[in-house]
Amino acid sequence: MALTPKQVAINALWKENPIFFQVLGICSTLAVTNQLINTLYMCFGLVFTTTLSNWVFSLIRNFVPPRVRIITQVMIIAVFVMIVEILIKVLDPEIHRIIGPYVGLIITNCIVMGRLEAFAGQNKPGISLLDGCMQGIGYSFILIIIACVREPLGFGTILGFPLPARELWWHQWIIMVQAPGAFFMLAIVTWIARGMIARQNKPTTTTSAAKS
Amino acid sequence: MGIVSSLLGISIASVYYTSLPIVKANEVLFLNRAICTVFDLPVASDNAAGYEKAVEENIVRDTLRHDGESIITLTQKSAPYTVGIVFSGVGFWDRIEGIITVTKDLSTISGIYFTEQHETPGLGARIEEEWFRSQFKGRKILWENPIGKRIIIGAGDKTQVNRVDAITGATQTSMAVMKSLNRSLASFKNAHDSKNGL
Image (cartoon, rainbow over all chains, first blue to last red; front, side, top):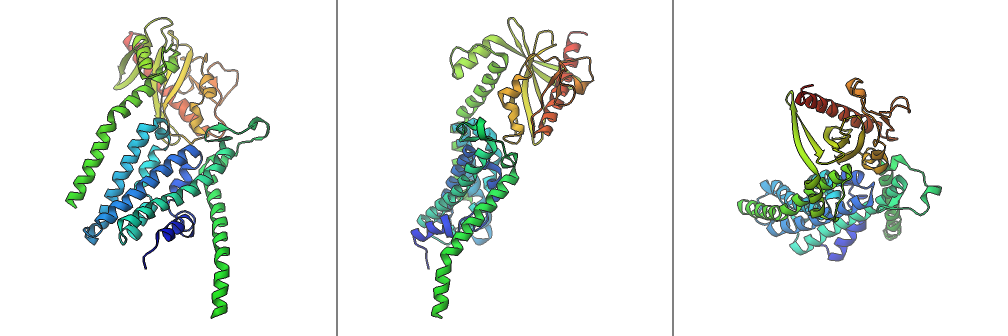
């Protein structure tokens, strides 16, 4: 049965979130979440790429022979990633100096290819576009949460602005600047989110068990 | 497949060539701003034209060659005739490149600026911060020392005239910067002496 736009959005943002449910896109989660501005640019890149590559691949899905579908997907993704990289280079060369290598790695980001293979290849362009966009947003909101914890603890700033009176109370947590800090944060976010989902599902399971 | 490839190729080529002038202009602006900062040049207006004019009016570029190595130098056209040496090396993660300026007699450092680095944000990447760079100002280069110890970052006696503090938690980056600086300065000195018949 085809999914409704509402179901697609809920799945991407919560029930089947790419980060804490599908556990995809972890490399970039670890790499760019130490500063919020880097995270925002990375999220922009991923939303742009997943949305447009899902839409384009869905448009041509009936003309692509199964044997060459993977290479076609990689080609489509690569083009959009290169466009994103050029856009960031034009808009903010300073940020490009910092996250440039990670933007290039969106090409191999599991979320993008996973959605093309699992969704855009079987669905119409409109709903595929929505799925790509929502999956990108689902990825983004988890990264933003992690960055909002890591940057204040690791740098004493938020979006580059110093925390109020930080010289009085703030001490640098070096681990939050490094990749292990992201591992801890990711684990905590995943634990909380999966716990909440499990609690939401519990009454339904009990009800069905009682009925049977 | 052919049609898809052609269409995608055309799209990326169009975006690339449309943005190329802006990307090039951004790169030139970044480099000119770095030169103006490290030489402490007066800039009439805070825009690309202002920085370009300041560099063109005050700096002369040269390439010194010695034993197959090329060293790019930037020299101030008027007093105090500060000399800038473009240095490079391998950092903790990737390439580090920058400009170090020294007085005309090559004895004292007057500034340093990093034009390329990919070190850990919050740790090694702090080499770009003002507090780290400003430590170099006024420090001596002890040319008579062995090549690796002409400038010292971190290790040794704190009263040494050629020493600056390393970055806490980024010892490897600090060591890499020290190594790159000393190696590039040695190449510069050899080329400079050979050019001047010393």
